Length: 51
Image (cartoon, rainbow, N blue to C red; front, side, top):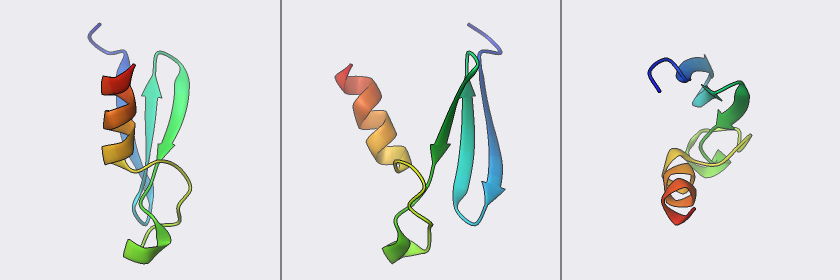
């Protein structure tokens, strides 16, 4: 599984997670300075745990 996940900074509070070729944008809501372009890291983690 090593090397299957890459995370890089995009801009502002946005990050991109590349997971086995799938692209996910992770961001914070506008209320805390993000652009709300994707789920927060906490929601992404909760989704992963839930599945």
